[in-house]
Image (cartoon, rainbow, N blue to C red; front, side, top):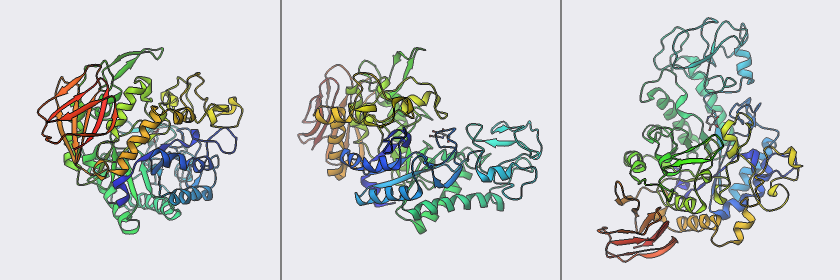
Amino acid sequence: MPKWLEDAVFYEIYPQSFLDANGDGIGDFEGIIRKLDYIRNLGCNALWINPCFDSPFKDAGYDVRDYKKAAPRYGTNDDLKRLFTEAHTRDMRVLLDLVPGHTSEEHPWFIESARAEPKAYRNRYIWSDNWIYWGNSAVRFVAGEAERNGVYVINFFKCQPALNYGFLRPAEPWQLPVDHPDSIATREALKDIMRFWMDAGCDGFRVDMAESLVKNDDENKSGTAALWRDIRAMLDAGYPEAALVSEWSHPDRSLKNGFHMDFLLDHEGGGYRSLVRDCAFDRGGRLTADASYFKKDSTSDITRFLGQYMPWYENTKNDGYISLITGNHDTPRISRNLSPRELALFYGMAFTMPGVPFIYYGDEIGMRYLNLPTKEGGYTRTGSRTPMQWNGGRNLGFSEAPAGELYLPVDSSPDAPTVEAQEKDPDSLLNTVKALLKLRHTEGDLQSKPNLEILSAKKGSRPVVYRRGSFVMGLNPSAEDARITGLPVSNRGTGVFSIGNGSLEKGTCTLGPQSFVVWRV
Ligand code: NOJ
C-alpha cells in the first residue's frame, strides 16, 4: 500500500472545464498547472484527471483513439509530463483515467479488427462468427456496421467496442477463454499503456468500469478479479508507489483484488444516494421530494448509509480504502437539492471519515447544476460539467474566449458562487472545506486509517456520533436541537471544528440544529 495514501485527499478535474490558459474556449494542461497552488491550498494533495487522451470525444474522452497521446486540445505529452513534474514539486500526485474496457471505434486496433480479413487484432475485440447473432443477451452487440462477417460487443455507447479479455465461461466457439493467447495479449497491451504513463511520471490510475472486463463472469466477478490481481502484481513489482482507484463500488471485490481504493457510488444498495440525493425532480427541474439524510427537513436517519457502508468497511479495512465523493462528472451536483449549509454538513462527515475522500472540482464552492443540452455524450451529466467559476471577471475567470465559443456556458446567474468571493468570506463553503482539510492533515487520527467506531446511530433518530482515535464527531442534520446520552466517552470534549454548536461532557452530547462538531477527547 503506497504510504502517501494515508493522508491523501483527491481533487477530480474535468479538464475541458477547469481553466483555459490559451483562450480557445476549452480547458488545458497549462490551466491545471496554473491552479495547482489553489488546489494545494484547498487541502487536496492529489488529482484525478478525466480522460485526456486523443479521442473523437463522443463520450467526453471515455472513447480513446490513442492511449499514448495526449488530446491536442489540452496540450502535448510534454505538457502533461510538465504537469506531473509541477505537481510533484508541490508534493502532489496525479492519477490519469484508465479506460480498460473499451476503446473508441476510431482506435486503429478496432479499424483493423473490423476489416473483412483483419491482418492483426482479429480477437482484440469480441466478434461473433457470423453477421447475425441472436444469443446471449447479457452483453450488447452492434450489427451491420463493419465489413467483417460478425457482430461486435459494446460496453457503453455504440462508439465504444469492448476489448476482449476473454470469457470466464465461454458458451460459443468465438468466445475465447481468459487464458487464450489473444485474451492475454489484450491484458498485456493494457499493462503496456499503464507502464507508458507511469514511466512518464504519473502516480497511478482511476479505472473506468473496472468490473466490466471479463465477460460471462460469475456472480463474484472472479474472472475480472483475477485479472486485476495480475495487474496489481505488475505495479507492485515495478511501481510500488502507484495507486489504483476503481469505479466499481463493491469494495469487498475491488479492494481484495488489486485496488487500493474504491468509490462508494450509488450503484448498489444506494448508500451514497441515501446521504445526499435521495430525491426527485419534476420535468422543469424542480425538486419534488427529498429524503436525503443531509436534507434539513427529511426524516431520514443514517442507518441506511451505515447498513451498506459498515459491513464493507469492516470486511475491507485491512485491504484498502473506501472513497467518499462530493460528486463526480457523472452525477448531478448535489447543490441541486442541498443548501450550502447542508453541503457543509455533508463535507464535515465526508472529510472526517476513514478512507480517501475525493472532491469534484467546483463542489468546494457549491457550484450549481445547470440544465443544458447534451455535449460530448454527456446528456443529463452535462449540467455537472460546466466551467469552473474562479472570479467575477470575463467568463467567471475560466477563459478569455468569446462567451459563445466556450466548451460549455458558464453559470450566468448573478449570484453564481466564485472562488474569489468565497475566499473573502470566512464562513463560506470554500473556507469550511479548507478548515476541515487542514484539520484532517494535522491529525493522523482523522486521515485514511481504519479507526472508525460508531458511538450512536439509531433508526428513526436524526443525529449520529462517531469516534476516530482521540476525536469524536457529532452530526445533527435536522432543524431541532439534539441530545444524545450514554456515550462511552468519559472525557470532556474540546471543540476543534464546528458548524453550528454543540457540547460533549460526561457521555452526553448536545448538538444545535444543523450542526457538525469535532471534539478532541
Ligand atoms: C464511467 C465514466 O465515469 C463515464 O463518464 C463514462 O461515460 C462511462 N464509464 C463509459 O466509459
